[in-house]
Length: 475
Image (cartoon, rainbow, N blue to C red; front, side, top):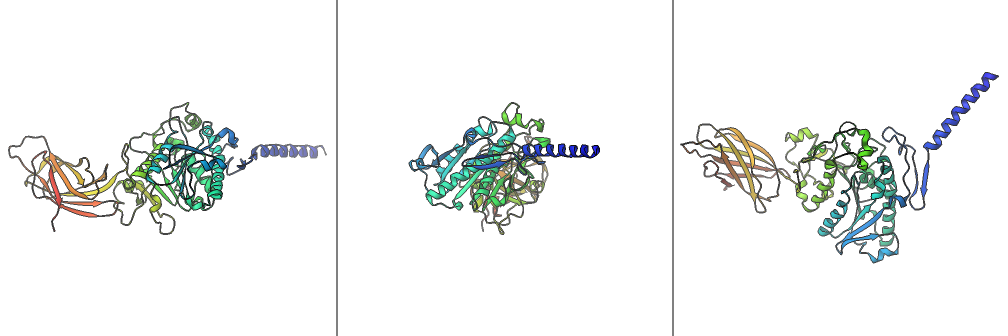
């Protein structure tokens, strides 16, 4: 009998422990307007989200909605009440929300600057979702707070739809970092959103989670994603996700390390310190996503994405040119029609090291003319059009052999429009009494974005460091 009671006591103690652990684990918090939030899986206590943390009260997060239109130079604060009648919000225009995922001080102004650019180019309502207070905390808490922000954005949308007779397909959300997943949460609350753009959706606490937690294709009619910081977080501190989560996913420069940026170093366990700014962390790769997007509003043609199986194949030129119409990464991505609603592959492109980042891809084939003997030298080419001219690009270094064709892939830094002239130059800085002259007898130019091929014919060879103007061949 004593053994029986000992067993019963042990069983009861274990059950009480499980109850207490379960009770603390399954905590829940409710707010009047935003609803209830729990820390049960998939929101907490999983491999991807080990900490079970509940969000703050909305008052602590301090979310504000800042409206920009063509009629107001500075923002107007929106509230879901009659005060909205005094603003310039119009139900006759499309509405774009921007949800930032703040990383450090100095990162606060880009959403407002992007809205200013946007309304200067199109007649829309652009609304910045400001939630800086809710981010300046431990990373897991910030991720949890984003759920409340999503509920607040959804409530604002419902208010706008109710008061201005708008439908969900008039709304587009642009989210960066944690904000990309908050945008996805909004989409799960408001069915039928026109579009969500994820700007480097953040990896920690979101990659490989249940689709309810992260951005995915069920969150809007069209989900486009830009990946810029995709190195593994655990080993190389890449903040961005690598997994494709949209109807179409873009991987500029391979999606891991952007030109002009460097990789971070440190321990992944220092995430809170990086997030709160107590340890050095360079956000360059992560912020490139919104920099590219902002520029794409003004220069969409500089961000053509090429379908390709992987970044190495793209780097080797195996996916050049576009054999069919290719999408433009960023603001104009929704102008691309997907055959069955989803992309079959990833899309890659190259960008510049600094602003402006957009580039324009070409393949150049130059057939050399000149004296029969070989010559050690450098060769350069540049493109000119009605709109602009490019810098010089090195075509070849080494032995020049007349009759041979030299190939070069370039990502031009400017959009020249239709190319009207190819400029050729050579030099070797070696005095030569024979004063040899070389030139491009023929140039074949293939444009990446649409596979347009143009031919240029040289009529006169040139001396060292003299520019040869190679014009379109005459029919």
